[in-house]
Image (cartoon, rainbow, N blue to C red; front, side, top):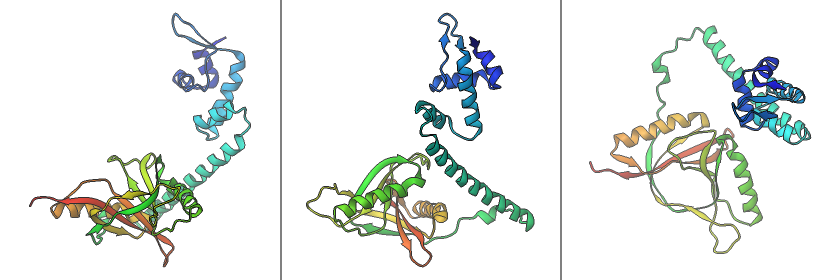
Amino acid sequence: MYSIGQLALILKVSTRTLRHYDDIDLLKPYNVNEENGYRYYTKEQISLAKNIIKLKEYGLTLEEIKEIIVNGYENNNEIIKKRLNIIEGEITRLSAMKDNLCKVLKENIIIKNKEFNCKKYEVQTVELDIINVISKRCTINIKDVGNIVGSLYEDINKNGLRIKNGHIVKYFENEYDPENADVEVCIPVESRKEGKLKINTIQKGLYVTATANSISEKGDVYENIINWVQLNHYEINGNPLEQYNVNYENGLFKIDIYYPITETVK
């Protein structure tokens, strides 16, 4: 039998790491002393532990490693392929960061605060009528919204409904977390009295809106809208909507951003 300290020395990891593996049921000790809580491991577990450490060094997450072990290493190729796709995306992102920094050095760019001033966008108020939608509420990484849109399109086509406009993303939480966003993904459709799909609605009312010509512009558009509301005696009374429509001139999304508002007493 090996104590947790001895196993940590063998694996060249901390005892805290091994306790965490125990907590998440990745590597449970063979025995735990009831009197002092000391964890003990068998010789056979050393091989499994070394495999866990090696897979982690390869870039797999602990959740992925656990899934491989639980399934008897049968679906490891699929898990590895998914991780490779994530790593490729990260490499692309880091490569773009590297190119930007190299450009700063090469062109001797001086970074000043005024260079990051918000770009100006036209902000206006609109009265929206009720919008009938087929929708799904979920908590997802905002990058995966397209998957939900695709499945909703399939349901709509199967049921013979007519799509009216581009998809809408409706937010529900004040604290925005792009990796765990609480959203309702909506497809505007023509209403029918009968049908298998439930038709939900986006309520009519007064909204303030502005348009981003690409996803990279969304932050500046939000800043413009919020500044406009504060300067023009209005109050935001709900969470935002984003409606995505394709700009056929460049193939990119044009995003109309809406906030529900009420007029305050001047």
